[in-house]
Amino acid sequence: MSSTGSFHPTGVSDVAAADSAVVGASLLPRSDPVLKVNALSVVYASSRGPIKAVADLTLSLHQGEFVSVLGPSGCGKSTLLGVLAGLQVATKGSAAVFDRPMMGRPHPNVGVVFQRPTLLPWLSVLDNILIPIEAMRRRKSDYLDRAHELLRLVALEKYASHYPAELSGGMQQRVGLARAMIHSPGLILMDEPFAALDAMTRERMSVELQEILRESGQSVLFITHSIPEAVFLSDRVLMMSASPGRIIKDVAIDLPRPRVTATMAQSEFAEICGALRKLYIQ
Ligand SMILES: Nc1ncnc2c1ncn2[C@@H]1O[C@H](COP(=O)(O)OP(=O)(O)OP(=O)(O)O)[C@@H](O)[C@H]1O
Ligand SMILES: [Mg+2]
Image (cartoon, rainbow, N blue to C red; front, top):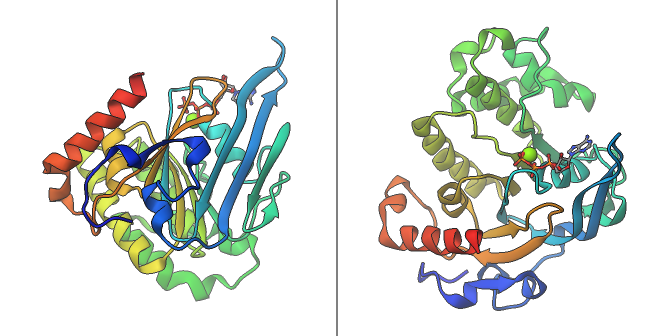
């Protein structure tokens, strides 16, 4: 990645060139992608006939990369995430995570933050966070310290023994975030994880998430509707077309890291957001 921190025309490419050297993030030495989606199409059967949710969608994500996906409501972002999470199958094309084709079964090295928090109402916050550990038949006691560390991260340390019904929507979403990270997965899929949070919490979570990832080297595919959030967090921003969605732009974000709250007040940051906004409405 360039250290100039400037957004320049070569940083914006049609997706056909996404893996070429002109895209900023591609300047890094490239390992095999941790995530590879090739010409993916998903069609839902419905009483009104087939619904084409994504069509001919191609993307890849490399070790340690943070890639955001922006796209209009209904363009197929959650559908894409569903395929990568192993909850949805491709109608055509392929999706592979850590070289394993995704055929409707979750990958153990993947954590998922869903658009809705989907917590189990009969389990406490702490036990909800430990669900992946139980599913993997590991010893929960080995993960208690990590669970409390994550509870601190999401500012819920006082709520470990509360139940989901006692939490606000934003708090439940933060539990979902901690749950996705409990087993330190190599790849985290996040579907609008901060959508239910107030502006201040959202900003703080962005800064802290970036800190954690800097140390852990985990890769993230992050779905959001917020251009500033995507710019702040990402190495690359992918833009989807309207439904049925495919990736139409692959934009490298060359702002230096670590990015801090003050980064959002810089003119360069505003310029990049402005350029993305123009692309978005084209
Ligand atoms: N289970 C389903 N059965 C039938 N159609 C579905 C199903 N899930 C999604 N769709 C349709 O597929 C399309 C893509 O939906 P999806 O939820 O992936 O969009 P999205 O980009 O995540 O939208 P949003 O930004 O509003 O969350 C939409 O037209 C939606 O109506
Ligand atoms: Mg969605």
